[in-house]
Image (cartoon, rainbow, N blue to C red):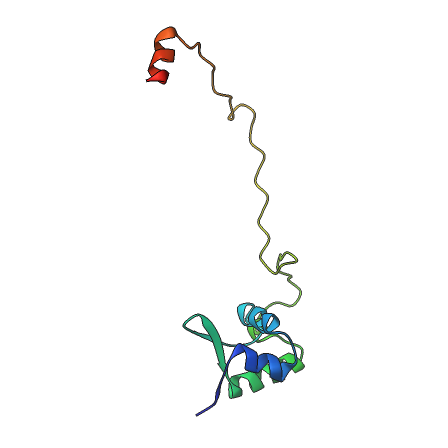
Length: 109
């Protein structure tokens, strides 16, 4: 049975910070699984993923079209499409009404 590695173990092996390893797990550049709240991987999976990365393809990139780029922001999150501009006719300001004396008394009590 393969040894199970934590984020800290993988960070030490790859000589990167643990946050980088977590990002690689989330982006599926390295295969991993969750145990509770923590990420784990095995030695065998890590070695295979390192070989795949060394060949120039990400683990999750297999079968992807390399000419088609994903719309991703700097933080790595997918970009949202801009909302269409609202029509001026469809967005109307609420109509103002006069405040009567009875209304003012109801507001006080």
